[in-house]
Length: 210
Image (cartoon, rainbow, N blue to C red):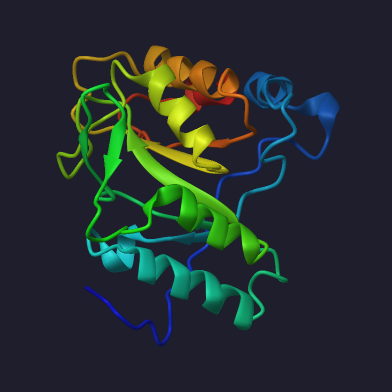
């Protein structure tokens, strides 16, 4: 596990702009996208740091804290890089009530305390889940727990959720992503919803409406 982070990898989370420059000539998908963005979130491409590409499953509370510190110290926060996002492997199980449980060895003070630390730096806190029964690394997925997980993320003061598409072969992508969108909308906290579907289900045809 990385105990020190000399030079964190600061990677932008780039999402294609949804609005055309000329509203009168916008495609139907672009017009639908503008209508879908009625919650005021992600009207510009969110920028920030995600743990996956460089660290994979080697994530920890200390890594996230040091990354948040580095984003501020380097001036990246002031340049618009707002989100610090934990990707896969932070969760290990569900408890008896079905709630997600974080790895207590890697996150000894819990996710809510970590989110509070990131917020104190003037940054947004993001987390990862998966639309299927398991995540890509076979941790608990959100399938069947959409409302419960959305409430958990809201209680932890999460600002951004990335939902992956592993172990979801039996599911309909538009239906499943819409289900979690609705769950987040009911959770009582503004949360940016990042669809990570990979392109196998032609998300360009339905994602703008979600």
